[in-house]
Image (cartoon, rainbow, N blue to C red):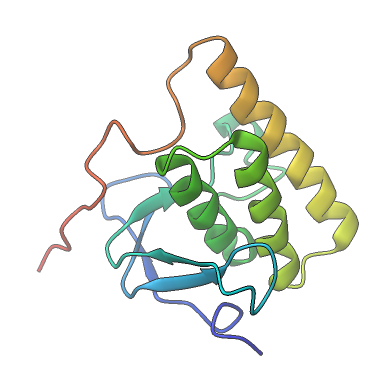
Length: 139
């Protein structure tokens, strides 16, 4: 088991439908485990699974198998990397959490198309670059 597969240091953002926040720093090896290229997602980073409400019956936006992959995807997009690259790392994140490989490929295609089309038609981007990167934890 890796630190990623055992990572559950995130919480639902109070008052939101599907926003989550890291409660600890998340580390992810880009490309392959042990690649030496580590993405570090800072504590308190906010993320979500961008499932349209009308599809939530098919995929819960609270699925722990998908949440961290979404966090990685959002962070890669926030850093201005390519949509295809972000979708590929999303797929790897799903596989690391033992999602069925066929489902991971379906997710990859859905995320790639959803994000790319959204950007092509100038819809609001699903990264959190327009919002504060951190939401302070309420006490």
